[in-house]
Image 1 (cartoon, rainbow, N blue to C red):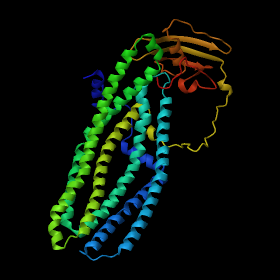
Image 2: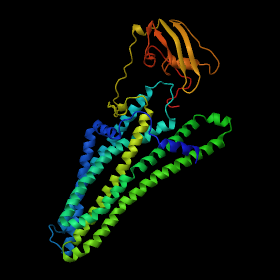
Image 3: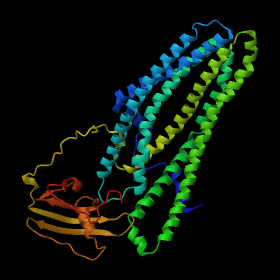
Length: 457
């Protein structure tokens, strides 16, 4: 097993760090954020699903009309008219879904990304993120995408439940024994989906981890092209990339294959149900208690119930996967309050952005003297840093800090500005103590340009 595989295996056996709300709370908050769009989407889905009943019922009437096995309510022209009308209503439902899906998606993802970025920027600026830049990017991209998708899928499952409830009621009214036997395979595969949830979560966690490592490697490589060329390490870098990508492929294949096998089991339940009807309905059809039209209606309904079963299994799997995504985002926001990810605020999507308010400079913002006493910081896991720095700057001074590479010049500036958390020491501005350096040393009191400014690396 490669080193990367060992790392991923270890990673999948542990929960992500950081504080994150439960998955259900994140999904519910996205619904509350844009309730009108979500309810309109739900209404459109219910209209689409309920009017999907019409083709099945008309198919029953058509076959009964052809065979004469049972009395019919409509003639052929009435059947065509009703079929045409139901299709128009279903088209309206589809238009309603299209017009609400995209806005709900965009608004929800923007809010989550805004909250992620806002709390990342509240961290000490020189502190490293808990994971690689590639993993951070994948959380802004793939993990955020999962949340609004699931919220909209809830509407899909509610529509299928409404359709299936009507379908089962109609089937029971025709034949209780045939209905119960035909539905038995679907109950069985639903149990399988519940039993598979832990493995689903494990494979998704490993797949996302592997994808983040590959993305991070690409980002770091592009940022160090010159160093790679100087060291003539191109071949080694390419070989390492192949190794990482192969591991990602294996993890992703396990994730996708397992989900596809489950989906296949769910969808093949319809074939079993149809076979059950063919076997047990033969005697009823000979006796005239079960018509060709009834058989056609049962097959039509079983197809839809199969969709419900398969989609319910998929939804269960994706809920566990969303839990992984929320944990990963919580880890990226380490130190933030638990509900920071779902804090509601306005998102500006139409270009009418709020005016930027620049802080006004007051008399307290004018420097008279800056006093630093005993300022210390040690990098975690090392002995490097600064210790016991004393410094006094007065208004009008021009101060240059010199020293060899690695002597602590940049570290001193970062600790003084709050970009790194001080271990000890005190800072006074015009004689007054400064408690929170990172929020105090900002414009108009201070300006800082890093040597190599970057957000993630």
